[in-house]
Amino acid sequence: MTKRDLASELDDYFNSLLLTEDEALLEAKRTSTAAGLPNIAVSAGQGKFLQLFALAMGAKRILEIGTLGGYSTIWLARSLPEGGKLVSLEHDPNFAKIAESNIDSAGLADKVDVVVGDALESLFDLRGEEPFDFIFIDADNKNVPGYLGWAIRLGRPGTVIIVDNVVRNGRVLDENDEGRAVIGTRKAVQYVHDHPRLDGVALQTTGVKGHDGYLIARLLP
Ligand code: SAH
Ligand code: DHB
Ligand code: MG
View (tube, rainbow, N blue to C red):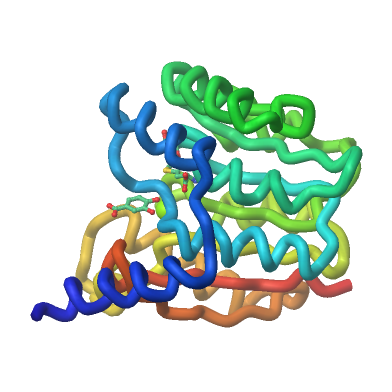
């Protein structure tokens, strides 16, 4: 058995005992696949991790950068209390439409706003809103340093920021990799190191999506 198969089987084992992908989550995946969206949503286990984390910190306002078909959005929005809000940013209007329909089917339309447009522009427009408690960055990794700058402006002391895809099967280690995603990820890790208001850690993950990882940072006063 390859390492990848083993990781995938382990995901199946743990998930069978610890989580349920209900009809709304499964439908979000089905409609996304049927519409030709790339198969890059978080795994079920990663989605539940995000949900537990947001619940544990009592997040009332969540910001997501990168909606795709709304799969991670549904996991996260289900952590919100009555009156809570999740804003998710997506530049592809077709993806956003599919996501909105999936979010609606999940009964979460009143809690979620999908904002269509380039994330850096949408973030600019979010200035002046109440701060976000939890921020999930899962879009184009080349722009993660910029997204981290916005996360600091749009958060408050104690806000938790999670960045997806910081390992990519180890590509992040290669200083000579000229991929903009890898360069952006390396800059993002350096950014957390350098910034006096960010304290973070990178957690490697494995499972059905292979070897990847989350960069997790807390915004200090
Ligand atoms: N969070 C989703 C997966 C997101 S995939 C999930 O786990 O279910 C990344 C998404 O980011 C894609 O839908 C892509 O269209 C979007 N994206 C990429 N660059 C973007 C940008 N500059 N502004 C807004 N969205 C962007
Ligand atoms: C891939 C996975 C992701 O979670 C993502 O946001 C982008 C790409 C991938 O597996 O290629
Ligand atoms: Mg991702």
